[in-house]
Length: 96
Image (tube, rainbow, N blue to C red; front, top):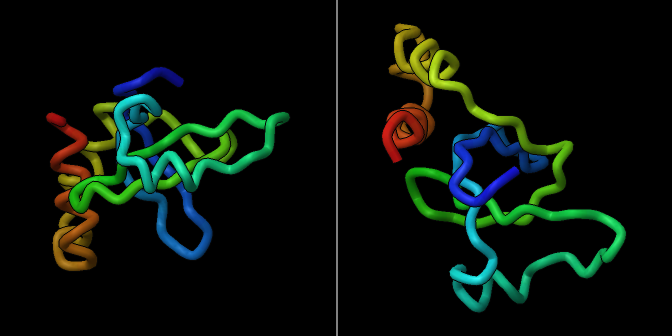
């Protein structure tokens, strides 16, 4: 993954959520400090939409979010009522 890739990140206990791969050099200090110390694994810093919360995720917990997937989610009528924050996150992912 590359900086500024739009992704769907999965954090345990939460639904998969849209976000963006962040540059580790330009994230807040407290987020840098939370980076896992495991040297054998590659972690990506994901900034989730719309609240700009960060999480360090392994590659297995991330997938690229394609434009057609975003459009399908936004266009599905049942999604509009379910989770307003998640719908807003997909809208931001459409044009970050």
